[in-house]
Image 1 (cartoon, rainbow, N blue to C red):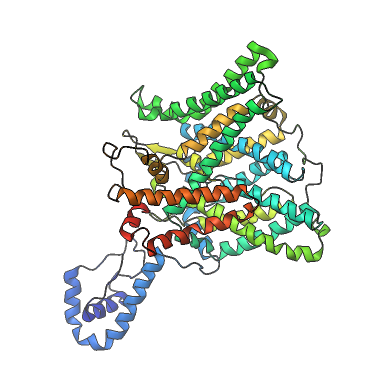
Image 2 (image 1 turned 120 degrees about the vertical axis):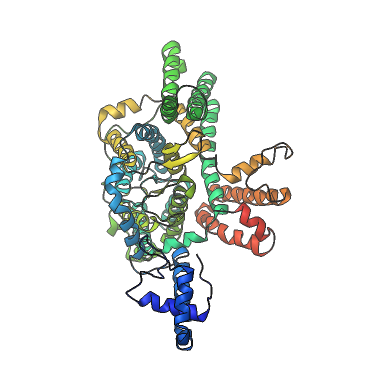
Length: 581
């Protein structure tokens, strides 16, 4: 809604109407249902009756209209920084009244299916990242710390966040940063855990300031261009991780060709079963109710199928066909046997202040990881309505950043890994809760807190109790590699960058027309090639010795997009189509 300059007499009349108690009219940027606009004929009549006041009201009415217009623009385009706690207060005022429905709406079979699927989808990365953290930190932060942190922080986040469909977890960039911090501690002869803790304390403080000042509004400068590249990167990481693990089963000297082949069969069987059953909702087989339930439980059935195949091979072939299984610590204790609380005073005073420098980079990393993923979750395509204004992707971010800052502080002082919104797990969570119509189009999303709470409660049970832990140690790693493949590939549909990448190999004469078909093919190919180049650069930086600069590369994507338009590399009319929100 944009206000244009009306005739001065009309503006004067509206000025009187807006302050008169006899009329229910307001220039508030958000008109409620009780606000009724004056009819044009009534406006004209009032304008005529007050025409003699034109001169005296000319200046004041002009100011009133400009202020109203500014208010409208501010509502749709908020400033980068707002008053203290304004964004957080707004987020919770919109979401907390719906808390009861957040519980009630989660009591159905679709949510049960999502819990079963996401339990494995969240546990397996936690175990995987835990072993990697243990390797780079020499056991200071290991599998038990990672799984415990995933359960505890995930539960708190699902309980208190403004967007509970977001799943938090560790990410590759965070691992790369921690590895760099380990090297810094060794080079400066400083104890790692106290340095890690003070860096986290500074980081949590900066994130806290960003949350209470609504700094997450910076995300408004991000567009589909950035979202697609980041989402494709995370999917790429999951798929590559699965393929590499399957490949190592053939090349590892401790393995055999038989085990390698069985690993491949189990992983592919898990992936194909999950993918096929998930797509059953779009077929004509069975009744709609049966299709829906089988589709919802598809990933869980895929995991069960993979486990059955692996166990059948183990029983029939013995030790020669026994595959490596999940490794979970047998007791609830730190990996190295250290106390849970980090000895903060073991770090020299100068280093405590000096930790502010690496904290700046950690802040950029966590800030972007968190907000880009929440922006993807809040995408209007998922048709979520709770606690948000229509088509607004910023609602909820400030409150969620507050929770992340608090969790970062807690995890830092007890030596647990920092967790932020995990892209693939969050998108998979949202899609597992999507409701489709008979034509296969997304109709709505089940917005609730039960799934997040249940997923992380189950993960916590695996940490605290012996029987759940014993059951999980019977699941082959190859099953989870198949689940990784499913997670990575299932996040790609709907990603227009991926669709345009596939289009490069299609015959344009017979291929179905897409939303961007009006754009010349050469421009579309150039735009896609630039995105692919950015993706390649991000992969290179992430895997290089300068991996700590990965968040800087992400931050540069938004300026690059605007440069492409301003420089004329991609004309504005074409950019508006290709990068349409």
